[in-house]
Image (tube, rainbow, N blue to C red; front, side):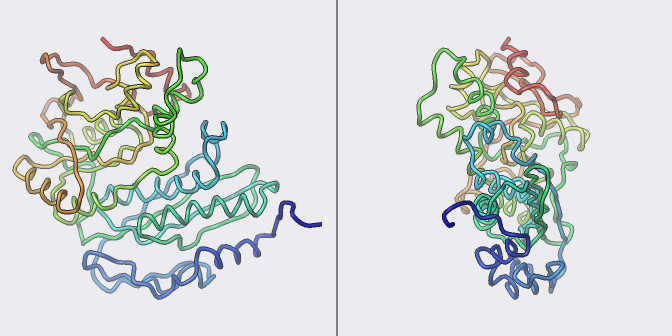
Length: 366
């Protein structure tokens, strides 16, 4: 019989991966910005570990993230594919390296799967991981595959930067300007909208729905932005917004021992987030700042460095938004056009069991 699902054993699947995605890694120079790094033994060597040779002084940046396997609401609804969650796994890990101002030099991935996952399904997930790495200019250099009771996805990303040049959360000082590379809240808005789409008075247009889903399907790690911030020494603190903008601001605030005053009109809000907020009957800014797995960078720069930072971003075809200022209050607040001050709107991600749409709905606009 032929044409049905194929379930190969683990060694066969390893060989399939090497043939399809991992050839030609060994011997490549994976450094950048004057950092000389050679991947002397990549996944194509099929050894126990990848081997890197560091030929210039540098700092090694390492981060690891587990992304809940297929337990994404949108995956369970059939709105995300195995390729999509594999891609997301790569970006979620590489984003942490980018937030440190480092250049990614590799990713180790763990893909565990139940027996019923056939070769095609397995290959689709790994193809997504491979593409996510490729789009960030790095390599999936190995990891682990094998059986488990359900799909389990985890990874570890590696990056390098000049010695002592890693961006930290704890460097913001009073007077520094708070910036973000782009609108936040898109992924949180998608989770708030799609599971409850049939309960709203109307549905969003196909174009807006695609915009929401694309945030999950093809998220972007801000590698180029991080390299500008780290390589030029502009940022005093930096973090990605994978927990949502409100949570990120509060985390930088606590790590740095400062407060923040955010100017509400300066916070960029995606039109798709505005439309979801209207359906939910909540404030757009609250939804934009709430728990959401975005990968923008939030960072602080001294006032005197702002224009040079803007110029360096523009020269690289990039942009950012200045949205507030650090102060000595130890509080995270926002101010509106009427000079009214309040705690930052939205709900920070703190591993709540409650659906984000319910959390935000419990905090109506003033």
